[in-house]
Length: 210
Ligand SMILES: [Zn+2]
Image (cartoon, rainbow, N blue to C red; front, side, top):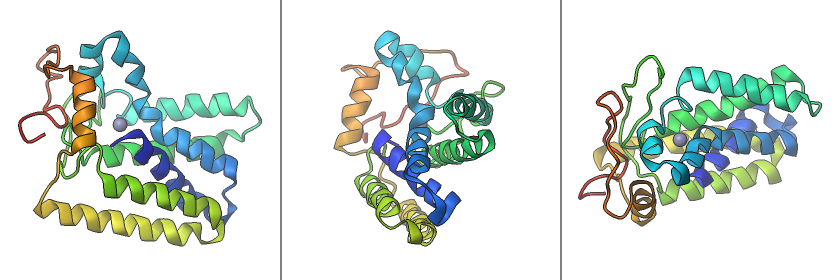
């Protein structure tokens, strides 16, 4: 999924995790943590094939999430955050990121670097508009009405599950936003730059239908 969705979903997860006690700073950290697994995007302008092959592997797998959570909490503790609280928030939001990426076409190598097999249930596109708008709307709700945060986030998760179940009948793996991103990642010709067989994947939005 795209960064806007992930940031919004991070805030919603923060609202679920902390309920009415979530501070704006907590929610801001969750928004940042929600996007964290995708920070390997810095590779894109440097070495596109490397990004294309490794994206949604080490930064999205369980080991990478755990390492990222501990590292982020260590940094946050330098700024006065309680370490365990920061780990809890960071891991919750970034795990939510990985889970939502399972529903995209390229899937996630959950056990990388020990296994490069991608687990996937392709149901939605990277730029799914209803999901993105829904996540942002709920995130605003979390900030404006913190007392109802937990209830609203549970309702949001139920709606998300219902949306995915509906998509099972008619998966939508591409839209105009996704096609724009696919071109950016893979180049105008769609070349992925190769990669070893262990890393080969059906890139998100690849192919005539995407
Ligand atoms: Zn991701």
